[in-house]
Image (cartoon, rainbow, N blue to C red; front, side, top):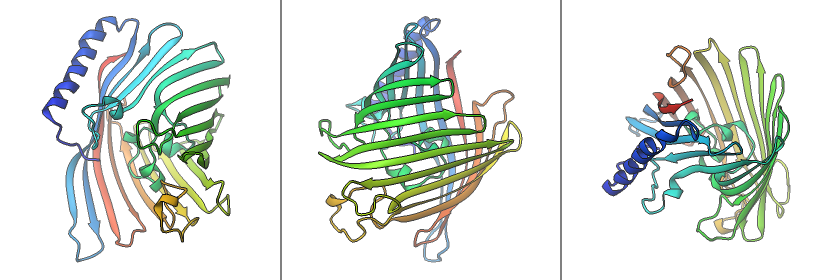
Length: 345
């Protein structure tokens, strides 16, 4: 989303927050702050149509501006915080709505950790799991899902390679502060010699007492300089005639690391919902992300380059993608991402 012009009062608040964090916390950074940074991405974006009646479009735009902080309060308490400073729907009166996450973690022991605060809603899949600033083009599901909410999560570390968690969060379909809708999320993070997994099953209320189920299987296969992300997701209501394969997403990304500084990738995916395709009243939809009748397909390629030696705080990228929209279009992008580290340990 483009970098927006912010109101003066909001700018003052943001600057005040940054100044307080930098000067008020920096003196305590020896014990409490491990990282404090500003992160941003700026792109040149071009949209070209295979249609003489439409005008091609191009522009420079700011995509993200994030304030990030992580650290420890004690041996057992840690926190993480990311504030999105350029959200298009920035709420000047409630900064929590612009917070991606503000989470306090309590390490009960080596096996169990309890987390509370605004967090990511744990839904499986690697495209979903990447930070938004690292996703260049994406599925219909990724574009429409709300992925941050206030929640409580318990983590169980089976061993160094496997963690399971259970989370109760506000539903991503909550539209009011007190909508009384919840999401119940069970996930497994695995890390083996050549395979990483992010699997989940989720029961998400879209109306009071009515749930849609996600079964999300995220797989990352690493062999030599190649890596493959393969995400499979099935979505279904308990009222749906066919529980499997009527509403699903398949997303694949193949990356080749030419050197430790340079990589190239191919990415493609499909979101399809043939359930309820004859239902006209949107109030009766089960799936509010990939709506009935959607059959969205996208494909593209790109490259990333890290020019600094032993440092990934600066990244250059380029990519091109298209989709199966009725009006054929080609999207081209060149840009860079950089971290401005204030404190880094």
